[in-house]
Image 1 (cartoon, rainbow, N blue to C red):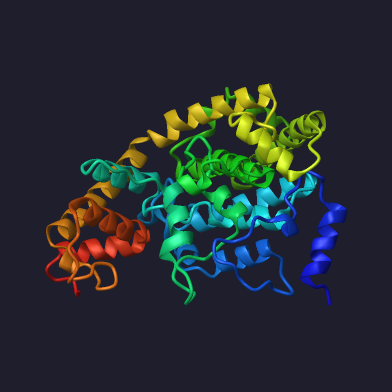
Image 2: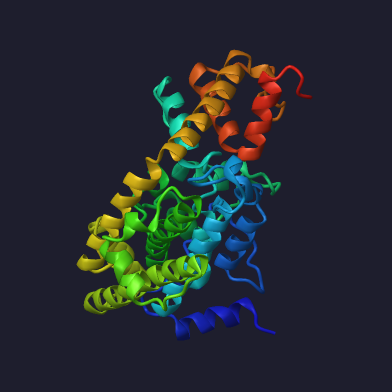
Length: 389
């Protein structure tokens, strides 16, 4: 039988010098007894998978909200895709796949219902009391406060490396959070790989969903350099559905190959001899991309992202979905705010007096925890007199 110690010894043999080894973890906020079979990052991964917030990702959508159909990607399928891509990259670069997987599985836990539309709505609501809502920071709050599974502490008590990876997750759609305890804690290379994998998955899979929905068509993409590069590598077939899958698959492959080649060169040049050297470098150069794409691929990806923004995210059907989601969230929030006693007992304590800002925060977090389906059902209960409550 392979024990935790065996796995840690194996990591020392097969991982790169700059990879984050399980035995070198900075540990947890609340000390716990060491597990004899799993490493600390394997335990983190398992705690995330068994969390309530992770299960809810199945019914939280991305671009196309749940009332548009069940083909489109949800937060859960996106999360699994990010974890798969990130592990592929991490394995090739000889990084710690368990740490990568834990960060990847947790990176979207804080998303509101109805994709980006939901987050935008909550952000605009919280501005009224001089606050904000950020799904990235909310993911951190969930794993450190809101998940209640253990008698000795709130949250999941994850390792520092996973917490920093969640808090400082950063892409074109995400901004790193900042709290005093982790202000000077730099992300590992494993966390940077998750950032890249998230961005890569978004770009490729939004094209898939966009083409399937008809919100973008192949003619929209025919002048894009990256799309044409993928098209040239695909065996032509009259089956349009299969052709789409093959092009999207090739898009992912092209990006990963470029990423690995570029990152390998940069890592070789930096010659990091430990994960601590990596962290020191990231602290000194927070914008430096040790793991990243070539300049050519970066430009091609940017052009494709701009095309998606123009053709897909601003398509009238997507705008309609966004506006509908915005109305639902605002109407639910206003009803709760007017009379918070309509909230469940475990959410809003009846005998406690809440300052206005705190009341907003409580309601905001409750709505953020909803799935698309639950939010739609709650809206019906609150606004349809014939709907059973």
